[in-house]
Length: 436
Image (cartoon, rainbow, N blue to C red; front, side, top):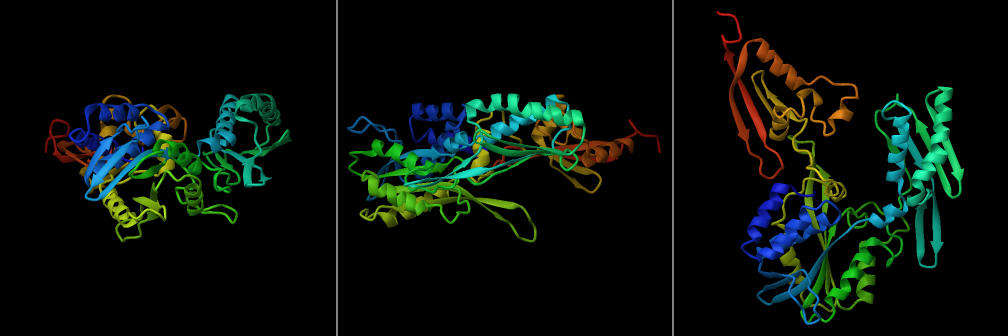
C-alpha cells in the first residue's frame, strides 16, 4: 500500500491502548482483505492515530440519528465529528477499460507464440458535449464485450498478420464506436504500452469521483451539532493527486465550493494525498515522497485556524510514504506481499556484500536464485534475456579464492518493509583452498 506495512502495524499496536479492541479488530480485518477498501482502511488508521496524538478521540460513536461517523475529536475548545473515505477513478476506468483490453490482447498474442513485449495500442477518443459540460470517452467496446471483441475481431486479424510473417505489423480497427491501432514490434522493446486521451480529469463540478464521494458522506453528518467534516484519502484519483489540468477541467476548489453550496451539513473537507519530487541533493538523485493535505473550510465556520493547526500536527505523525496512491491502490488489490529490497544489493570492496533480507530468505528457501535479479514473477522473468548478476559474480569469486563468510549481520530498516543482510568474507580458509 502507500505506507510500509510495519509502520501501519506499529500504529495499530499504539491505538489498542486508545480505542476499544473491537474498533481495531475491524480495521485489521479490512486491512487484511485485498481490494479497494484496504486503502480506505489505511487512511482511517493513520488519521485516527495522528489525531490520537493531538487530543481525545472516539471511533464510530452513535449519533441521535443512529448513524456512526468514524471520528469524534475533542481538544480544548475544538470539537468535531468527521467521516473518513477514499476516492478513486474506478468508475471512470470501468467506462474506459483500456487496461483490460491490453491484457486480453497480450494473452492472445502469447497464445500465437509471438515474442514477449513490443505491443503498442493507440486508442482514439471523442468529446461528449452536454449541458453540464464535457466528457472524454475512449472509443472502446464496453467492458462486458471486451473478450468477445478480442476473440472475434482482433485475434483473426493477428492470425492473418502472423501468417504473412512480416514484422513489425499494425492493425487498424474502426467499427461500431471502436477506433484503435495495434502495433507489434518485439524488436523495439520487451515492454507493452498504450496511449490515449486523458479521460480522468474532472470537467463538470458535480459529476466527478471527488464530488460523488463527498455527496455519499454528507447524509452521514446530517443533524450534527458540532463542527462536521469529511476526510478524503487518495485511492488513485486524478483530481486529488494534483495531475496537470487541461483548459476545460475544473479545479478542486470549484468542486468543493459547489459541494458546500449544495450541502450545508459539512463544515470542512480535508484531502489527503502524496506528492513526489526529485531529490537533487549531491548524495541522491532519487524521488522523494511526502504527505500532503489540503483543507477547505466553509466560510461560516469560525474554527478554520484551529483546524489548520490541528491537521498540520496530525500529519506529522503519518508514516513516510513508500509509493504513490495510484500504485498503492493497485498493490492493495493484490493478495500477496509487495517487494522489499528485491534485486537491490551493495558491494563494499571485494569482501563485503549486502542483499535484502527477504530475498536472502527466499533464496535459502529455494524459491529464487540470485540470477533472478529480484524478479517478482520468476517464471516469466526467466523467459527474458538474462543479465549478469554482479553480486553473484563477487560471491563466486570469493568462494573460488577459498573465502567463506566470516560474519553475517542483519541491518534493520524498520520504516521499510525489508532489512539488509550484510555478509563479510574472511581470509582464505584451508578447508576449501590449498595449503600455503
